[in-house]
Length: 308
Image (tube, rainbow, N blue to C red; front, side, top):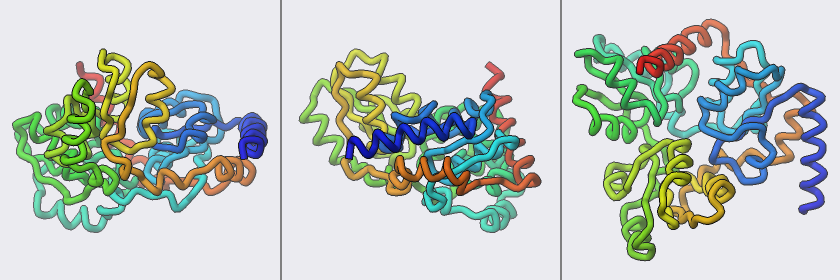
């Protein structure tokens, strides 16, 4: 199997050069896919980095909304998603039709859209946010208006604990982070009494309450490098453990739940990456009218990010 993988990796390298392609891998991808990527990181961070390159082709090893975001920010590049069925259950919990209907109930609210959403939902939102900057975006953009936060109710709740803004939440959630339970963390804290606990803000409030920090995946990576703790309990999708171990070989990383696996993130394989490069498919392309409106919501977020 190792010899077979080595041959596939060599072919990927050849086709990457031939296609003038860049390979992006989200932090939740399987280890061998992370290892062949040009960049590994958060979804928006990856698309921004790709936009700064001269690559003509982007192979996005992630889920569908991430490839859409790359298409939004890189309209001149061909964006490939190695498995077109790699979707995001939370993003699928809201449709543009349902959003438009709900907006009628809150006509004066600012619609803050988590980037874990489809392009057409972004296009009908006022501003986007990431898990890293959600609090800042809500604080800066709302004035005295109510905030309608979509689609993740738990990230929304986390933001509400950090701000005095009036907020309404869409009832979406991440099934993977829902598998992380408070009792598991309590048990692990007893087993590793000196460990620090860091979790993703998509977790339930009772899980976040047990953590030392609630951070985005990039935040978790930075936390791991800076903390003096040798044991770290990690409350997010288990794929991040691969990178954490590579970057911090002297520390021990304990998954808060072995069940925190996103099956959609695991659909991307080396074989599918190679096939995508060979066939230049499956392509994800956001229609221009939707792309322009969605990009406006992303740009608004980036403007807020530059106000400090």
